[in-house]
Image (tube, rainbow, N blue to C red):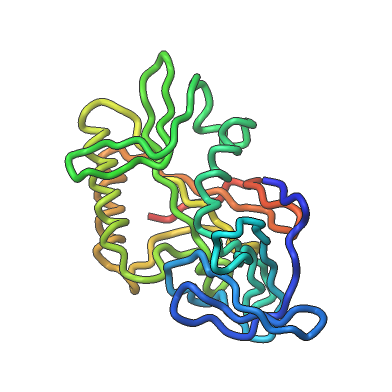
Amino acid sequence: MNFDPPLAEGRLLRRYKRFLADVELPGGEQVTIHCPNTGSMKACLAEGSPCWFSVSDNPKRKYSRTWEIATTPTGDLAGVNTGRANALVEEAIVNGTIAELQGYERVRREVPYGAERSRIDLLLEGAAGNCYVEVKNVTLCEDEGQGLFPDSVSSRGTKHLRELAAMVAEGHRAVLLFCAQHTGIRRVSAAAEIDPLYAQTLAEVAAQGVEVYAYQASIAPDAIALRTPLPVII
């Protein structure tokens, strides 16, 4: 995913009200930008650190700038725009990076499915059948590169796991793919201390046949792309 033009740089002052952040521009001007991340962003925030944002020319937007990349307290980079994750995974499927998800003829986004009225992030379709792919953006990184999801309790995430297991029961492939937008992550697991129900449900659905993969993104102001498979610990 290329940014054209490359992202603009500022200095993070603070994040507040979940969807807002104040940033100082290189010339000293302070602006408010949109924060497209509903999570806690635990371990992603370092006030005074460099951050990068995109700029929209849409006159209807209240905040023209959108936060895209944060510098973490450990000096790593994290892609904080959760809305980018699905596109990153789709791009990595199409260009062959995600070897486990090759051989399908069509990719569709946000397709309604399941008894709990969910929308699957990506539906892969081909002669061999359908593959339901749920994407989760991972930016929480703890000691020694341990990536964790979720960063706050996620009943919605647990519901998605149940829906994936239901697809397996119906004879389809179902995949949970962790999109690790953090340059320090070396492996991924469920954040059992934050959301024990999610961790328990993940273990249960994996035993029922839901496939679980993780890929790490390379992150820079001009491009973000999934590159490297990571181990998943269940």
